[in-house]
Amino acid sequence: MSAWTIRDFHSQDVEGILALWQSLRESDVAPVYDLSEVLASCEKDHAVVAVQGEQVIGAAVARAAHDQGWIVFLATVPSFRGRGIGTMLLAAVENRMEAHGLNKLSALMPETQTRVEAFTNRGFVVKKNLRYFERRIPVQRAERGALDELGGRVLPRDLWDRVAGMTAEKELLERRLVLPLAEPELAEEFGVVPPRAVVLFGPPGTGKTTFAKAIASRLEWPFVEVFPSRLAGEPGGLAGALRQTFLEIAELEHVVVFIDEVEEIASRRSGEPPSPMQGVTNELLKIIPAFRDQPGRLLVCATNFIRSLDSAFLRHGRFDYVIPIGLPDEAARSAMWNRFIPAHVVAEIDVQALVGASAGFSPADIEFAARSASQRALEKAMADGAPLTGRRGPVTENYLETIGETTATVSDAVAESFLDDIAALART
Image (cartoon, rainbow, N blue to C red; front, side, top):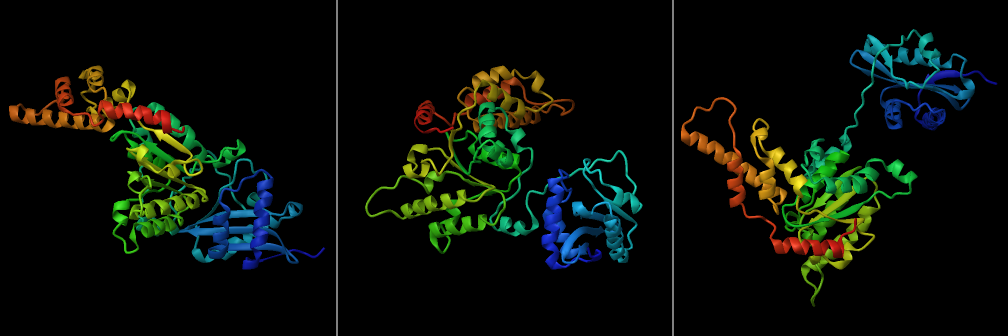
């Protein structure tokens, strides 16, 4: 058997690195750094390989950050372990990094890794009582330009928790959408296909847009809202602009796409000759299957008038779920009032009285009434000329007054029609 030698990494060694990576995975020692990071450092940073003939039997990969170096990858073919190859690889890669003037060379290893002789032989010291923290950045640098062009953004991580009340709706969305999308490998084990498209329907002001954003926040996926009214003025017309927009969206690895008032571009097709909007509806019906073929994305469409949607739009195979978002119940209204009332006065407010008086209010109605009460209380305090010291704020009467003057967005007739829509069209 010929002797092994150590040399610099060459591009043709990639297959050997892949084989070493796989051998670590098979030994139940998950590498700290992703394979993509290791391969990137092979090309851009410092990498050496141990070879016997044409076979790569070991590799060490490192990168420098200011005055500190990091070992990104160290592995040896199982049958060659115990021969000092790892120690020699570490020495070789350290020599290549001397020009950086490093003060320290460090390595992160899984707790399950027991083969540490290469490091200890080279003089590495185990540091006790350290914890490794890691956070995935939602949007990669290569995707940032495409996301900016689309007007998309990564939303704050706490939007989901900030949705007051609406517990039943949140639990349903958590189970049906968030869980299988956030844990695709677990979903696959149970034979669950992660959803690709969902319709949220319900009366105006019930929080459909808020829920769409909260889902994106919960998943930590970029949020892109498509505005048909803005696309209509594009040179290629609305249908062409819609097609181009979804082609650009396809460049993102993960994304929640939101179309509000989707009935504007997916209404029932009828009439002879066909109207221009029928062409837009046809285009959208073509776009959705192509969108569904790509993993790591979710289309959320919202509508106040679900019965106006084209029947082909809602059929199985295009949308996984058709979920109603209705008016908040007592528990949800209580949570909303507690959120909108200033924290320093909430204990002095008869929240239950506000909950009872605001029956039939949408979340938007409650927020409006709460903001109005605060504004009126401030104006009254200023007009009275009382010194603005101490803990001041609105009182129960301020809220009851604004509730009495607020016209509910959802009429009794609309609420009744919504219940009929749930019976006829909901798919949860």
